[in-house]
Length: 185
Image (tube, rainbow, N blue to C red; front, side, top):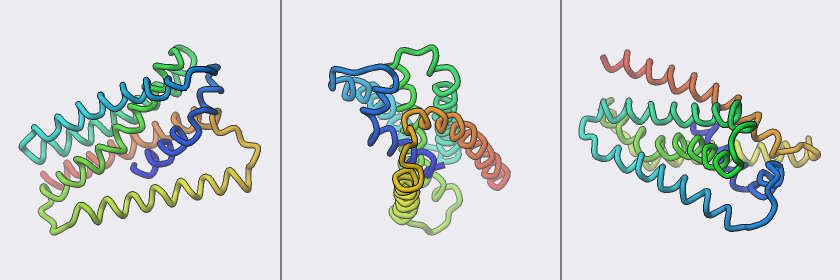
């Protein structure tokens, strides 16, 4: 789940000018910070409110639901939003869809998973592992698109990927939730 979010986060961030150009927007550079303010505030409110939930089981499954919701946002953005949303709101929706799983995994899921399974673990180590895998995956993607498919249109492919990874992320987060629900019964 984290790998998918890392790949999309990297492409969305590093190729933002190309994505905006692909969407037909050329001009004011402040659009980048305007969209990210909406994303940041929304993600902070959602992830910040998870701290208020005292019961680890409930917080864990709400966190998993937030991850699934993020992937649902990606799916909506890719299937419907590309043709029906203003580019500004499309980028905001993809931001929510990417950062909700990306940050919820490291800020809530690991913490609550350690608490409910009662395993001796270190959240820093888990974060290090998933970050390493995420960055490795993103670097492989950059090398692949740079050397093997140099003429690949990444902005166009980005909107295809958000559909594919949105579906995969929904499936994996649902199956993971089901696994933990059965395991923790």
